[in-house]
Length: 100
Image (tube, rainbow, N blue to C red; front, side, top):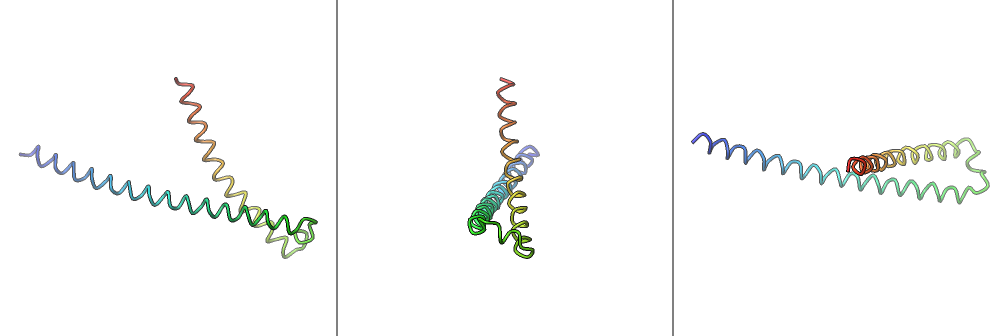
């Protein structure tokens, strides 16, 4: 009798935990997609601003230069986040091939 109760309880806890993990991973993937879109927008904006300021007149100005610098730092920060993730994935795949 007790084994049935424990088995059913374990099953319910497993189903509940699996459901929570599924929805959590789905939400994380949505946030990751949002961050990738933001990174693309910032990258496009920086490229476009560089095209507009080909001679460097705006970037050398104090007020607009500050905006250029902040946007460049934001893009480097986002690139650093995603490059680190790719490096970690590559290093784990290298470790797997070395272990084989």
